[in-house]
Image (cartoon, rainbow, N blue to C red):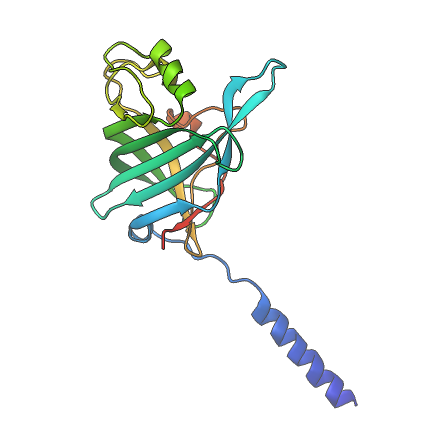
Length: 215
């Protein structure tokens, strides 16, 4: 009986050890770049804090889905569809950014996480998907643009675009991060106060909902 008890204890201990999750191995920048190549998509609509506030002074959320493509030459294409609702049933606008990346080095959030700077110097496209958004753009962004219409794309690259706080000649960029685990790609989580990543000092310090590889 004693022997049987010892054997059962040893077997149970071995199973417990085998069941423990393996520690994530750190990856170099080049390894993360190679893993990033391909297309990635949102698992579901995602929520972000914004700097806009409602009548009660509460921060308004906004919802989006992402499609991201990274190529071996360091170029990227990011498509975002912003929605009025948490389930993505009422799309408002499609935004497409295209450009190149800079990889400054490791990010301390997790082993293998890497800093990345997205520079949208090839395209910054805006496509209204509902009439109220087109109407709003026709009030706020008329100089240098055609009339804003639903499903009609305009490239705002290098142009003054007051709705997004962009000035003439400005190239939009973000200081972000990439962390890949179990074939999921994590970026930096938006700051809770709504600050963007347009400045290096605003670099994210947490992870947001991941994307998965497009099948």
